[in-house]
Length: 257
Ligand SMILES: NC(=O)c1ccc[n+]([C@@H]2O[C@H](COP(=O)([O-])OP(=O)(O)OC[C@H]3O[C@@H](n4cnc5c(N)ncnc54)[C@H](O)[C@@H]3O)[C@@H](O)[C@H]2O)c1
Image 1 (cartoon, rainbow, N blue to C red):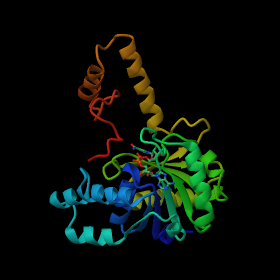
Image 2 (cartoon, protein in one colour):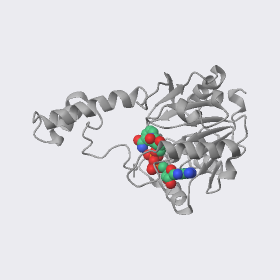
Image 3 (cartoon, rainbow, N blue to C red):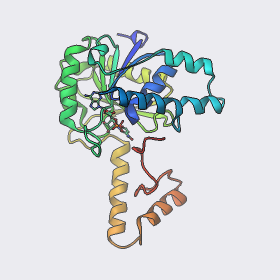
Image 4 (cartoon, rainbow, N blue to C red):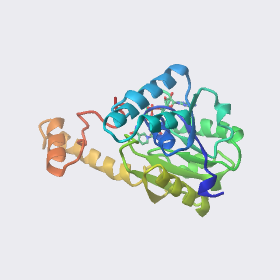
């Protein structure tokens, strides 16, 4: 398989991340099939893609893209509730949540979903998880395509954040990682190769970021800062962080409306 063989992208989960990954992929000219659980969620995804803070309508208004380009991109998008519609995709990116309102992600759910997808999607297709924390090798292990399985960790909002962590396991073939890296470049991102490790620790970004969050919580607990807002003020205005570690102004899961 070569990068040029990737024509159709499957996205599983049409939330904050899946919607964004779908958006950048259709804009790059890929045919995209995005699956979520019901029509209501899919309608919301389409609306965010068009009218959200980082949506296509705003991009037209800011002169970043033309109406014709948007029409062409949207013609490449299929939103579906049927898992069978993913059977012929060339690359599949999973971006499912935890299955509950508050839960960001759930490892057992990812196991179940990938087991099901492994039986449905053609065996040559590359599988990638957008998980922020889970060890990729554990998820790959439920499939019969460990050599074609990697992590592809986009950041939120996907349309804006430039970097993607492309995570390789001891079983991932070099050819597949090269294709995943090339795919990220095609959708306008800067891929960084990351070695997978046991322990669900996250990769480069979240591992470092959450160390800072833990430290911020200690700073508050020890009474060094009077209130969480003060910690965010120091880090945003002192270090130019876009949001502070206490995330008082909303974080990456706010939906980017
Ligand atoms: N939000 C972020 O900042 C961020 C950043 C990077 C990575 N991630 C990771 O991306 C994944 C998704 O996060 P999110 O913020 O987009 O979550 P989200 O809750 O916004 O969206 C998840 C979607 O998955 C759907 N879903 C659940 N089970 C499904 C199934 N079996 N088939 C299809 N769809 C299903 C839900 O209905 C929901 O719409 C998580 O693994 C998360 O850790 C999140």
